[in-house]
Image (cartoon, rainbow, N blue to C red; front, side, top):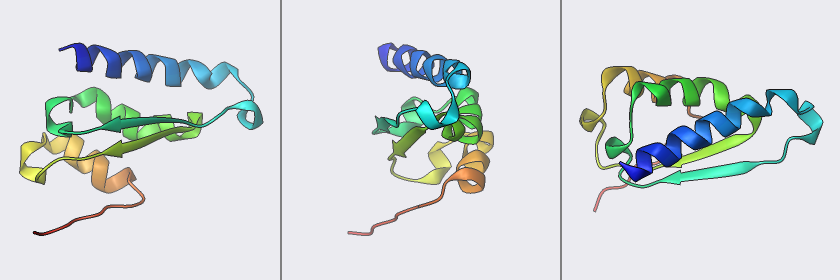
Length: 87
């Protein structure tokens, strides 16, 4: 629950950067492990909109079936690098 609140706060902060000139925006990063526990429809917006505000996302989870279809579609439609490993 606290993690979801923090993610929402970061989304609000990322979107508030619209008032900052593009060349003055500094990169900031959001790392999320066990992404399926935080993946809400709000993440579809984050994945499609936040990059222009220089928010970089690193998300990790075990398998795509754990994600809502809308979030999964947003990942495959917006993510530039996907890594998969098998042990």
